[in-house]
Length: 195
Image (tube, rainbow, N blue to C red; front, side, top):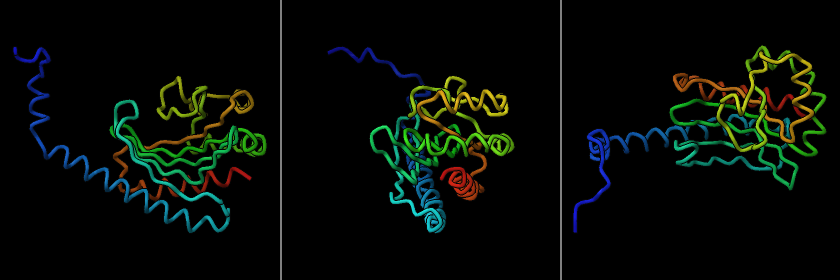
C-alpha cells in the first residue's frame, strides 16, 4: 500500500500533535458552561416576576459554522409555529449574544410593544433579524441589520413582514469578565419587551 494521498501542512501537523491546545479549548468551554450557569441562576431569580413555565437549558455544540458554541435558552417555548426563546450565546472566535426570538401568537401578542421599543433598542445597539431561516445566529448583513441603520418605519415593516422576529445584541469575547452581567441585563431588558 502506498502512503496516503491526503497531506497535512506543517501547521496542521503541529496542531494535532499538541494535546495542550485541545485541553485548553475544553477548559474554556467548561468555564463558558459555568458562566452561563451563573447567568441562568441570576435570571431564574428574576423569573418570579415573569413565571415562565419552561425550564432553562444550557446546550453545547462543536459545529455552528464550523466553530464550537454554548447556549442558554430561557424561556424556550416551541409549540408548532408559536415560538418564544431568549437565547444567550457564546460562539467561539466571534461573540457573546442575547437574542429574543418570537413567532406565531407570541409575535402577534408583542408586535405593538416591540414597535414602541424602537428608540430604546436603537440606544442599546440591538439588531433585528432579516433572514427567513430563524436558526441562523451570525451577524452578517444577510442575517441581521443594525436597528441604527433603519428608520422607525422600516423597523416596523420588518416586524410585520418577518414570520420570526429576532432582536439581538452582541459583545466581543474580550468582554469575558463582564459577560455574565451583560447577558443577565440583556435578558431582563428583553423580557421587559414582551407581555
